Length: 405
Image: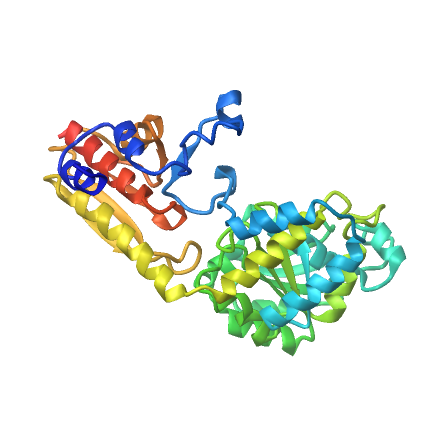
């Protein structure tokens, strides 16, 4: 009996995830590395898992493609001047993303801080050194933002010493603007939350002659979002490099006007005595992200979407084969905008909760991380899975639900 027949036969039966894992080719998550390589996770006793959740930072984001790793390894063998590399890579990236200028940062959070710093200081080196002490340099000190856009990542802006002024309506914006107002900030993940949409927000900023900035760390896919806000005219756009792009997890992109990007770099490494000195990004990360973006823009995104749909369909079929289980396929409107499966069940017939099922999947072999939980449902997002892992996830979910039936 060949491998295909084994998988087909076993797909209708509950069985241990560890057995199914053994059917997959080596080099999948959790598989032993070649004999000449150290398995450092195993040595250290660190649990690895199948990612059925998404590009979550505490779960180490995404996995880099081989071409990114190749760029990192190749660039590690030579020295270069960091500013020259940022200049050249920034020029290339700016063209790709339809921006006047761009620079690689140590994550989207860093991009927000450096972009904010650039707005506050301009090209004045004395002001750069004075951040976050805005009063000393006579700098502006307020940023307007919608109440619905309050998240802890806004601390990236507050690192520069600014105070966030919360508003709800266009009238509130008009009243809030004063001589201390430095900019107006929009949260991309809350694109449809709050009373003011991103187009009107930009128009209000232009009305008051203020920079409009946007945090779209997790707004890709769709691929068009990479350049959409630059095309619209936002003054700077911050994006993660370690999510959908699958570049280095610690990388990010700051895109925007030439003036803001140039000023932001005055606060960025390798310069010292600045607010961004600790936000170091090395040559390997810069080139790794450059290649990741380049390849992502060339990808067949329709084909990729179909692959995600196929993964969802396979897991859905396995879950629905268990009596008293229902499913729903949805696509989150902004962040993690990919086909996603919600699995629910009748707790009178299946004796487990969502939280218990998540714990069982996490504790299994191989370990699987999904999300949701609660009384009677879990959510599975398969876009960060490696090919073939959807079979393991489908079988394990089916196994646990049958066990509890």
